[in-house]
Image (tube, rainbow, N blue to C red):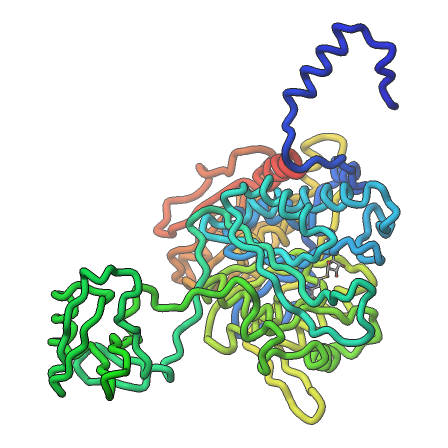
Length: 557
Ligand SMILES: C[S@@+](CC[C@H](N)C(=O)[O-])C[C@H]1O[C@@H](n2cnc3c(N)ncnc32)[C@H](O)[C@@H]1O
């Protein structure tokens, strides 16, 4: 209800004015908008349901697909992957007003006076949770266009800190064609907004191309390029002129130079100069492939050469669409995925080849496909976690079949495209209704916590299970991290702990074992573990998960 200032006492008005004066005058202001599910979340607990039939087993890295609401997926990931993610890429709804952004089950249109506030509330909640997942040297890259660019920049300044803004990369996505717009400027680009978790982040530059370094004197300095670096200085004064001599021809060159006389004489003596063929040519330093301070070239901030659309090697949208359609024959109205090459380039220049990459607006799964392609190309062990809801049944009709095709290969016209060595675990994000007492809620999670444990410990195969008289005693899962095998044990019945430890002793397994012990509180029954050579860690469940959920509710709102 609007305040009637005419009814206020003078002192009250002065107090109000003083308060308004003190308020921040610069920055992002929006009206926080609630999301329906937030109410429901207070009496429901998100869980992951492992879908065995959709598990694609393979020799390569195990990727994760979570179908469901990304806010809750981020809550789960705050328990399983806090500070473990190298790169987050997202391509959220751009809020064009053209049926792309659903808020509380309704499309937001341009007439909605809370249009920007709704989008900002939606993004703010998710970005705050996403930030907690990044490693210190990690970064988040967000696709966006003019509809929300300005709002997103200010929001990210708030969430990640202005100092952690890295770059706003314009990406040219198309060439102008068709009827020109009324204002005679065709919009052909959008942006990739990059924020780092901390100053430890750096891009991986562009590797130098060895074919550009065809010469070698076989003196241990390695190959060098044809065109060297001009040694003339344009900034030194005429007082600093001196003469150098080509020892092979005796020709002299008098000028101001980029290096001191002593250093140039050293370079001449050590054969590091490319001398010109005649007096008018330039004296140059040999440009050695391995002599660089940085082994890579810095990336240009306008993208993406060669994927900017200016270059022949850029797959135009039609080619990308052809590939997409042949992977997923469908009539679904989702024909605007990001180009796979754009995603491959982005990932390859942003993180190492053993990185964990998260996309929580995964749509058709381009990020997952790109990660698989990169691993196939360079033998990397990147792992990808992708999450998307099932809007228009996209998860079941497009995302999952596309990733299966990327793993197994597919037919494109007359060609067969080879698959990639990868595996995929599929989870549905679902909810457990909280019970009236805490103990009942804990008991409810006793048998419904497996998915979360599988994800946290990256162990997806049941290696062994022991049945008790009435229910399961324990389950042992196995998996493979890039560092080697890992094991995760869920203990349902505390009295079976010695049997579970004995299983590892019998199998000759000595390390990388984690026990999650069901408990109604913070105790993990450490005293019930027998003396053993086994190197293990232990934690109670579901306590840590429930505490983490509470924390994320405070962070995400
Ligand atoms: C713009 S598309 C992403 C396209 C993707 N980059 C690609 O190349 O296919 C955004 C996707 O996020 C999904 N999405 C929107 N809101 C979501 C939410 N709250 N939780 C999970 N997914 C969501 C939409 O269904 C849509 O498929």
